[in-house]
Image 1 (cartoon, rainbow, N blue to C red):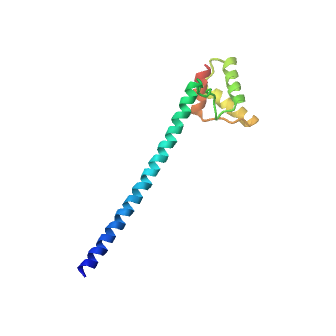
Image 2: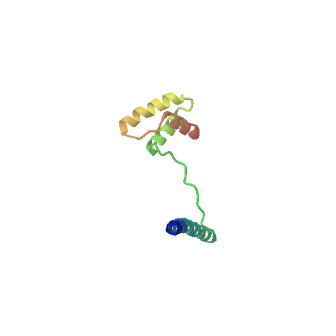
Image 3: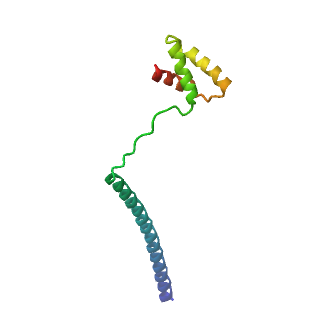
Length: 117
């Protein structure tokens, strides 16, 4: 009887050990996969550097405001350089409603005026 219990316990230990080994193999395979992905990315970057490819930042232009609105706003300050920003934005909003231009927030328009002037 004791011998059967020992055998059953030994079998359980063997199964437990195999389960741990299988999980360890799975984790190692995931690690190898990640390393392969990183190696491919490093190779791609090295090739780009060898070819002297330069990644330049995008030109900074307003995204929320249409270009026509930007040009109109610049025109307001060319005609009347001493005009208040608030009144210029108010006029721009009226024209934008009339022509269907997209406009950003007041804060983005203030930044735009600061760049223009």
